[in-house]
Length: 256
Image (cartoon, rainbow, N blue to C red; front, top):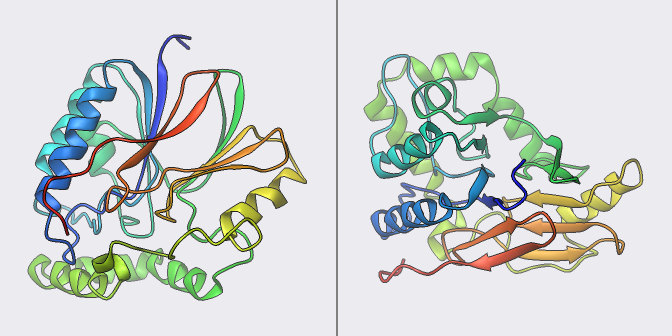
């Protein structure tokens, strides 16, 4: 790896969210960020829920997102790897993004070494012995039969149904999955990371999902990093081989 290049992490853009009024502005801002980081990026990790909904039919994909897809394709074409983790909102990514856009899709956690440091990477949904109701829901959504059945519905109806489902989330308040940071003793992903450290050392646990940018010292040797979101915080994480930071980019001029 090039020691002078940086590794970037971002998540929870929720492009196309029906509950938000500034989807176009947020998309343009995220493209601006991608265009900016590509100049010194060795690799980019998109940690899930980049889209508020995504489903690929055999011969069709959801309308929109052309700016983001085009920019990511240009980045991968230039030789910079882009890793795409499926989140709970864009779990139905199949072969279109890797084939047409060139991303490397991950559907589960990834344990890897980056610039000599051990990383535990994932979107963050369904980890640990928490949120049992969601785990049941995730099993339903990952069912091949459900995916096959959903694909039989005309896109006009199926995507409308998906947007209606998404519209019931707290995204309309700028929050998803949880409210403010709950504290180390109540944050499920922090507790999960601490449990994992009992089995194996990692220098960094990097997740999205919570929408709350965080940098938590776990035991003096390991840190929990949450990339935040591009709904209210517009944050990302960057690793240069020595330092890992959570930073704010900029906020769109048009609000929710």
